Amino acid sequence: MGRLEGYRTVVTGAGAGIGKAIVERYLAEGARVVGVARKDTQLQELKAMGALPLKGDVTTYETAEQAVAAAVDAWGGLDTYVANAGLWDFYKRVERQSPEELEKAFQEIFGVNLLGTLYGARAALSALRDSKGSVIATGSNACFLAGGGGALYTSSKFALRGLVMQLAKEFAPHVRVNGVAPGATDTGISGPAALGQDTRDMNADKDRMATMEEYMMLGRVSQPEDHASLYVLLASREESSYVTGAMFKSDGGLTISV
Ligand SMILES: NC(=O)c1ccc[n+]([C@@H]2O[C@H](COP(=O)([O-])OP(=O)(O)OC[C@H]3O[C@@H](n4cnc5c(N)ncnc54)[C@H](O)[C@@H]3O)[C@@H](O)[C@H]2O)c1
Image (cartoon, rainbow, N blue to C red; front, side, top):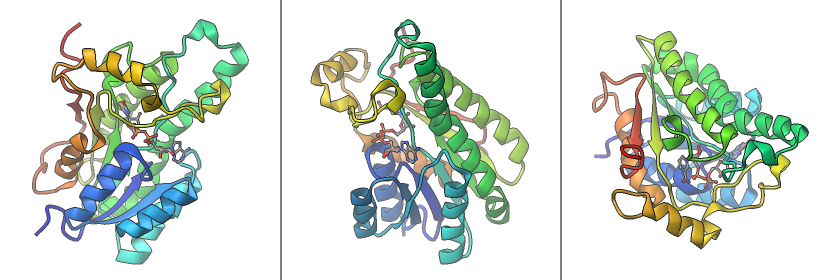
């Protein structure tokens, strides 16, 4: 018997990286998953894995509504909404962005990392109240310290941590809201089109990955699967029944020392 047997879930950013690892693990634990992704190839893969694929852009409320409706229509409710889709900024310094780029990149990064989570939580609230379910957001080491990205990424993830705490307060007592904060992870995360980073993949830069490894107390950059157990724990009513408003670090010790 899986740890999430019968759980009805939504995972955004499900087509690659950490989101795909969450989907695989949730399915293995007996959950049913609506996987939100943007690319057709990713949607086909999600279907082949046994998830219910949904094409969407998390910066629109419509996508959040459709994802919740897909779970409710297919399985009669929703137990867990995982807001995981994210954009990075490749450490882009403020002074190297024109004011116009700053504005557009702000909208893209905050649109995905923060507003996407807020939309998901808002759209899922009623169904989660019915099931006494939970929201899980993907944070970052950048929720806690400077230097995990540039100003836009770092401020978006600090804001996300505040959002998790505030929503936990507002949605209590029936809906728990938590986050997982991964450290450097071997994925092809990209950045905003406004900075020409939408076709970049972080892990394509092997030198960057080698540098990241040097900061990891545990001696390696993580794989997406390293974080998946925490998403199971936080989804499970039995295993984390008294946890809300928490942002669980899964960062190999990255944020415990300067
Ligand atoms: N990779 C790391 O080192 C790292 C470290 C800390 C936190 N994170 C966080 O992990 C989460 C997942 O990132 P990842 O590293 O697995 O990268 P990834 O690029 O593999 O996954 C992110 C997914 O989000 C999707 N996405 C982006 N914008 C979207 C939009 N507007 N609508 C719908 N989907 C959209 C992408 O298509 C992609 O599939 C992000 O929130 C990221 O900030 C990653």
